[in-house]
Amino acid sequence: MKQQFELAEQFIQHWQSLWGDAPNASSLDVPQARFDEAWQAYTQRLLGNYPFQHARYAGQMLKPPHPVAVLGYLTAMMINPNNHALDGGPPTSHMEKEVVQQFAAMFGLPQNTLGHLTGGGTVANLEALWVARCIHPNKKIAFSADAHYTHERMCAVLGIESVKIPCNTTGHMDLQALETALQAGDIGTVVFTLGTTGLGIVDPLADALDLQQQYGFRIHVDAAYGGFFALLKAEPDFKPARHFRAIAQADSVVIDPHKHGLQPYGCGCVLFSDPSVGQFYKHDSPYTYFSSEELHLGEISLECSRPGAAAGALWLTLRCLPLKADDGLGLILKACLKAAKDFYQLMQASEEWQVYTEPELDIVAYYPNLSHTKAVDQQSQALFDAAMNSPENPIFVSVYNMASERLVHRNPSLVADTPRCRILRSVLMKPEHERYTGALHEGLSTYLKVLS
Ligand SMILES: *Cc1c(COP(=O)(O)O)cnc(C)c1O
Image (tube, rainbow, N blue to C red; front, top):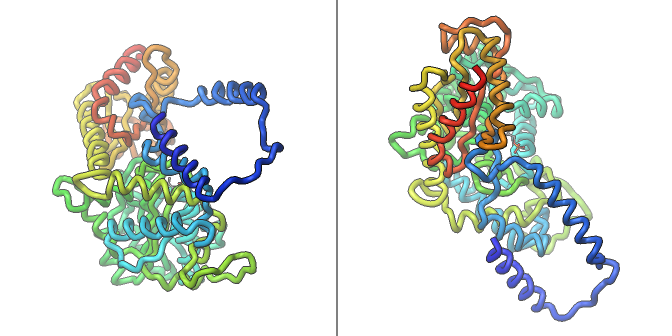
């Protein structure tokens, strides 16, 4: 890390020196003692974080950015370009266009795909739903019951009626239920989630293409979490591969580089296969600087100021860890898949555990093997607390709240004596997890023994 800071520092000094001496402003000076005190207080507070960098953290979708991304971000941040307009930062604006093209290629979308980075998956999805409304102003938007809650919320923000399509017991959108809903003739767009946030389940997009032919709806793919797994779409042993291949048929796609793309927060991306949707973003502002004839990113984005550093960090990362199946990010994702598979098998083979369903990506949901949902619910919560608060060997997992009925469908020996039941969930999104599944299984089993 020290080396990275030095590289950033060296470059910034060089960049500054190109522009000659500049005056100082003493109002910017901070007294040393005041700084020391503030820094002390700041770092003390930051110690209150969970160990997101460590394999023992297998809770939510959280991990620190790759050191290369940190270097890329830090260096550009010290310049602070604004990718709102090309003139706000020509180099990082061009980098943004290049990474968007790389994502389009990864998904098999057309070469002239229009897209841009966003503050995250929420805004990226908002933009896609907004464009969907521009194209089908009086039609509804459908998504599965397990889709991210942002879709329902953003439909409300946009004043669009939404339809929730039930999932089958494994958490996949039920295509029969979708067809029944489509028969009403008022659905303009269907959102398919490729990698649900809760369980990493991949909606059956490839199987829905016939329905699309028949009913002519717009396809939006929310691959905020799972998008990078498209790198593995030609791998014979990657089961959901064909659904990732079907993304090529989508009208819009969202992917979050700040989830599986090794980036710091503040990096989502939305793509549109038809570049003419850019017309909906048209605005006329006296503030924007127009020094070039090229399309300004600010003209195809709902957000105005956006960090050029985010584009720079992503660009540098993809140079070092390319979007390939057998190199760079592909190897990282394979390690995560392997971790999930191994962990699933270890849990599956243990008497004291039940697994909810076979993982499709790198998220595994499981629970103590007990007779009633009330007991499962209580034990899961107790285990979550005990594992996280242990001073010797803390393990961080997360809790997933689901309808007991669904659990019972998957595991008929379980009796539902509560309407809902909390179970446990582990997001194995760090390649380091590949070598930690044994310790994770053993640690959790030990806590379970102590509790029962
Ligand atoms: C994370 C996520 C979102 C929301 O994205 P943010 O980056 O948290 O704003 C939307 N959809 C899915 C499937 C996600 O996993």
